[in-house]
Image (cartoon, rainbow, N blue to C red; front, side, top):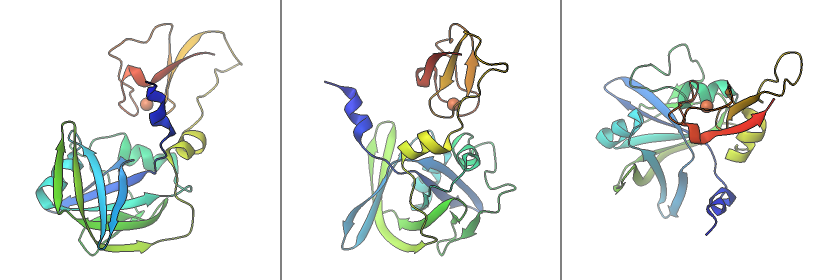
Amino acid sequence: MNEKALFQLSYGLYVLTAAREGKQNGCIINTAGQVTNTPNRIQIAVNKANYTHDMIKETGEFTVSIISQKADFELFKRFGFQSGKDTDKFEGFKGYAVGANGINYITEGCNGYISVKVEQTLDLDTHTLFIGPVTDMEVLNDTPSTTYTYYQENIKPKPQAPQGGGNGKTAWVCKICGYVYEGEELPTDYICPLCKHPASDFEKTVR
Ligand code: FE
């Protein structure tokens, strides 16, 4: 069995937003899709560790903003690499508007949004699958949607080369955000300071 087959699946990227008691929050997901068309139903799978997960569980509503190829890395940092538990991800951010359901949708770096009312949930251990009909949706522009592959190749910053050219030293590069850890060995319990992904998401390179 070759687990790399999973990498052959194509994924889009989305800002998933929810609102509860006046607080707006959002996170980045790659697990959204249309599952029926009469009516139009959308499914999302959300990690239970995400603050947005709890907000959707309680309110039964969410909006998926579809990230386009014009999105910059800052959008991923803002919504993907910090937790809404201890930050206001919308602070100082102007690239959004309020949808008919009262939930912010993202206008910056996104080409459309879809709002959903949750009809069914399925417990999947680490994640919850939320499924429901579309309550509102709009196209924002015609920039193509990004895929995870496009993000990896074009949006994520390229690791910075060491000053003065290659030095032959070993470094570890985070595959998610491009952060570089200089050092021969990466501690097994290391957590990326930028995107919070574990040591297993780092790749060894010689600089
Ligand atoms: Fe990272």
